[in-house]
Length: 303
Image 1 (cartoon, one colour):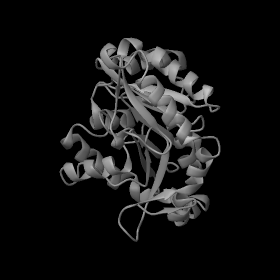
Image 2 (cartoon, helix red, strand yellow; image 1 turned 135 degrees about the vertical axis):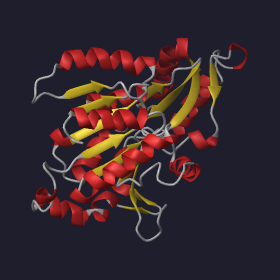
Image 3 (tube, rainbow, N blue to C red; image 1 turned 90 degrees about the vertical axis):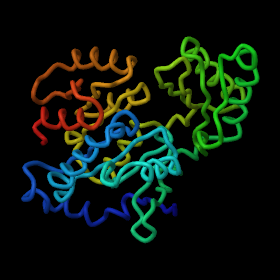
Image 4 (tube, rainbow, N blue to C red; image 1 turned 180 degrees about the vertical axis):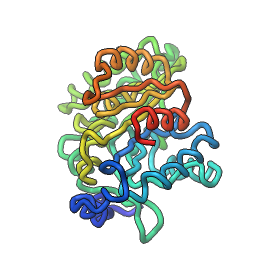
């Protein structure tokens, strides 16, 4: 897609003004929401439930100025391929899109029908990120003792790499050690970063990112761009790379089909948060995927 500074702010300026002036309140029982959802295994995976959510969101929240944002590990090209694969109506077009595990932010481009990258977000990451150092660090780990016949790490294709993301697969039992080795290799080259791991198979994704990146910081960037009250943010996920985002949301949703690592974290975190009316909530739903999101919104009184 095209790129431009502050694409979210430019693309939604009218909506932000309407929110600031209270224009949406008469059409809705509360202030606008920001719903941030992971895609695979959360919003996507059950086409019927996805269509039900889409119809609900259009009817109940979209016209009232609420914001729908997808936050995914996919690239923009992979997201657009997903939209082509799904039945019509199963995945609603978002108001904002976060890709690459919180490394790219996009707004809908009304001129092209695609998405325009938010250059202000990209600049935040660019300041402290050296892509060449990150690529070298990844190659060092892949080419070390864990690669080859050891088969503890495996490379991923170009579609899974990004300007601000370098990724590999690691055997689940050594993923934490691989993450430390990636960070150490990056520091040896004079740079710093962060690592996010996710997946529930024999091999899991290990993503090397800029320190300022991630689903949580990207969610906050989107929230600020749309001037949404922090207490009106709902984040939904199903895997370990969603922990950061769920931990930072006032209302967090772990869908019923969540991977074991996230489910374990969510149950512990939910108990710690408690259920006081004004405290942050973390819900573990019975229903899976988009049906779980609908269940959670109903529990929160937002349906």
